[in-house]
Length: 152
Image (cartoon, rainbow, N blue to C red; front, side):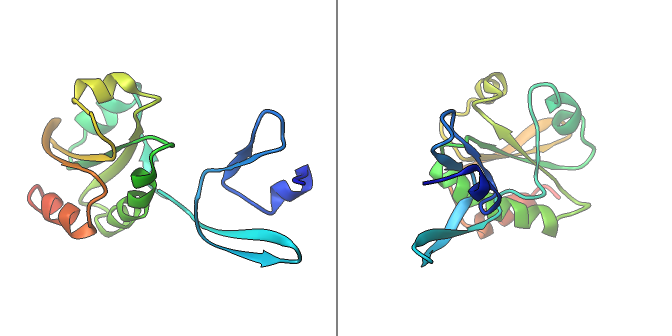
């Protein structure tokens, strides 16, 4: 049974209200059996990509002097978790040329509605405060790179 002591063994999650269920918020990459218990090795998701919300949207996205990539996502979305590492890679590769943010559509529904988000993940590229392109779904990195390069 899970105990508070095991909380230190697994990071990137939270205890449910009754403290009997650990809710994992990272993507497991493999599990193995060790000393009679399952050990999950995880991969960090969306590390280094800052979150944007309704309060910071205008300043960070629309007011940016450089192009901006925004990933519209939600914690319950499986394909969103698949694309997080790709967005993180792009953020590192385009440092200084492109700003990357993520917007949780559950936390900021007004922005999602304003831009007509009907499916997630959706990646939008903004330049000079205007939406320039939108890519819907968990697409390959090359698809995103092609779109980004058009606006640099």
